[in-house]
Amino acid sequence: MNLRTQYNIPANAVITIAGTVGVGKSTMTNALANALNFRTSFEKVDSNPYLDKFYADFERWSFHLQIYFLAERFKEQKRIFEYGGGFIQDRSIYEDTGIFAKMHYEKGTMSPVDYETYKSLFEAMVMTPYFPHPDLLIYLEGTIDDIIDRIKLRGRPMEQQTPITYWEEMHERYENWITAFNACPVLRLNINDYDLVENEGTIEPIIEKISHTLHQTQLLKK
Image (tube, rainbow, N blue to C red):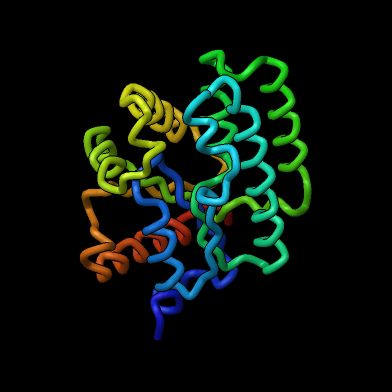
């Protein structure tokens, strides 16, 4: 018996992983997909034509970057819909609009016109039948010091050149965002409570928590 059937996780479930940069979303996505025999849905970072430009000049490229992410993430939403679920998703589409685009608008690195255009596109996409809301959002959380250490450890040049104040603000915005988030059920996991790199077995207690949260949600719907 595999872990999905053992813990009675629906075969068509859609679980999305959220959290700030460097928190370990990709590692969690792969570990859960392997354990549950689900497909993965990753954001395209390495092939993103705007990312390096964005880190060099936020004001010039923030709108382009967010539109690119929005388009790519909607393609993934459509793919999940067509397969009928059974996916672990690395980062949610809600973070794009609720954190990143909003932050650039409020800081003046995205113009009001661009921000309104972005929000209109997002709202139009959400209203389509190709937009399955997740059954569960797993929020990975940790202290700002833990997260900065992880960013330094993975060593992406464009992230190393970014001021620490940017990551501190991002961390605060994520904490405020998840507190108000209500689009789907949320399971919060502290990154210090497991180590999927050194001990793959720590995935099973996480799956048990996922199962409990999903079933509690179903009971509340009845």
